[in-house]
Length: 355
Image 1 (cartoon, rainbow, N blue to C red):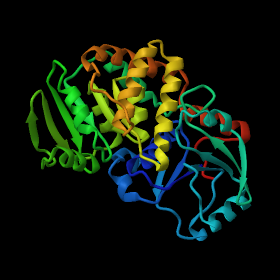
Image 2 (image 1 turned 90 degrees about the horizontal axis):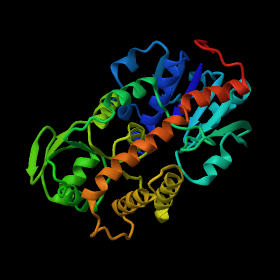
Image 3 (image 1 turned 180 degrees about the horizontal axis):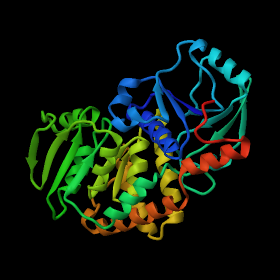
């Protein structure tokens, strides 16, 4: 059995990544206990199948050591720190502990991937998601690969919008309005809809529609992960936020624009730069990478002038670039498979075991 601990910090992103991992481990016939400290957030994105999955237990964090029995593998997502009484039991059980870290394109992810660490009296190993074969890759389920193949080349007239608070959104929308096509823009409730109403001075409500020039806006409720994947697949452009949604958008291979989680001292800008530095290595159209870099940096608050940005000309390049990047990421294999292979190097990991 594998235990996964998640401390929800970035709203849906942290919980979403962990849920996908747990689900995919179950798909590969491993029993999983998913400990999440914010079940209310989790309930908005999991499915009925997750709830009824005999290999998946979804639980809140143990309130004391008596409520917790360590399993053979402990995965601490995003360097989460466990209470001392749980660490003591994990140490006594000699569990294999994995520090599953944040996604980044920065060089240290390759340098630290699979390195051992010693903290709280416990030896653990870093495991980094990433964008190269020197990292663990991304979570790529077989079902997602099938859907991507089915939707390849299909065009719609939809745009998905999932963002944080962002004052630059009107400028991005004005660019999209220049495209010679009418689009339905689906706006998710919560922070995204609140920001849309704030920057445009509207009062759009869930399930209501607002028409403006070539764009028709519709506010929609939060959906579970399967439904969100479907929305991404059936959109020509996906404006996404955080970690989980940018990964899905990149894998799907449709044009994407990333609203990264803002950090102190503008460190999030460093992460954006690192991503496009990598894309420039692996993608053939270097100029297109630079164009996408500039519009992404602008969208995230950097001092970039996009007044002369020709989005109509860029559209074809954007599509081709997104497909090529998706193909590269898929070629790395799934993080789940890469993680299982690493676990098997360290211990005798068997399927459908209870402890």
